[in-house]
Image (cartoon, rainbow, N blue to C red; front, side, top):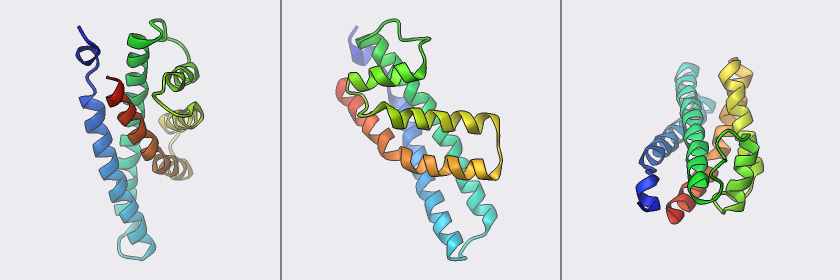
Length: 145
């Protein structure tokens, strides 16, 4: 059984596509809000959906990294801290730098336990920066399948 048989990336690709569409919609809604072309409620819905798919996309990303590393590098990666996973993923060329991924994961954890407006704003700002890292990771993953 080859690597392509072991590593199905279709779910993460679909989720990433949905995240990118939702992010685009939320960014447009944010701009429209600033120009008084939409109401706060519409923006909050768009932002909330983006945050939700940020969480899911990040979750699927680290799980896919873990699966890839398990198959190709370290069979004992499961159960190790996420920081170690991101270091190994970087060493293997799946990502350029583990530090942004640590920060994405830290913000994802924050929103899971505490929800208030300031936190939603912070996580939305983080989600805005996540897109290029997600797209780069998926390209690298596809190259290494």
